[in-house]
Image (cartoon, rainbow, N blue to C red):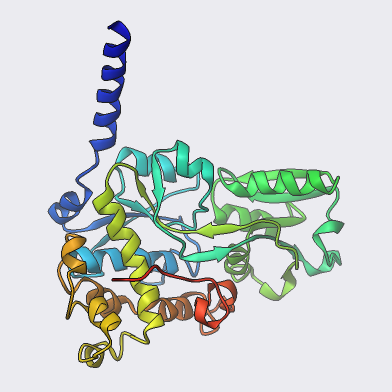
Length: 337
């Protein structure tokens, strides 16, 4: 009997902890904004521009959720967080969601009380070196000093790679990506390692971007995406499908420019996306035009990619794996039906 009481007590405690933040949708509506955790400043993904406006591919996920829930993509409160701060901020309820170039791993998915809501950027870890070193391959980095951001999977991947290749290195750790690139530029390390997307973003912050190059090796899988707390399936579904709506819109050829004409489409998939038929919005506890608002105000995934990190942006990153599955990439959304 004592054992049964202990089990019941434990179950009650878990229930309380899981349900403590189970009303995120109501909280967001009550606050009139989405509290979204972002980086402390990573160009192309989440960084304030010259006028203080937050922009980037991760920022657009936050904006998509705000458009879906509140009908206004601008109703986002951005909370800059370091890699070490990000999960605690989400767990504690300081933020409603995290959209901060965060890698989906089994440990994070199963032991932190968090759920990843998909992948908005498929990435992999690489190395940035100064051209003057004459290094052409990561396999030439034995004995190198490496600038790295603390509290990331990058640290673990680096250790695995050097150990597997019987090489030595000295880690120079920093709390933010800005500190990391400054350390690299100041010559405190021979090489900077991070996700390749970050390397392109950090390289353009150098006084002479052409003085550094990204080595060809990709040493890990880094599926990056938004994160929410476990125990709130309604909010989990909203964040997940807000991101999927961006992808589906691109698949269907629906853009921020043609969306009003597309509302007249007889394509059942477009009708479900834009809420002219079906009950997708109601099932998500949102208005019928939730996805219309996302695409009208934020654009589709291709539009967001191109303006933030694509060839039309300062980063000039090719779509690669992030191209739609119908065009040779692996960016894919489940059916909206």
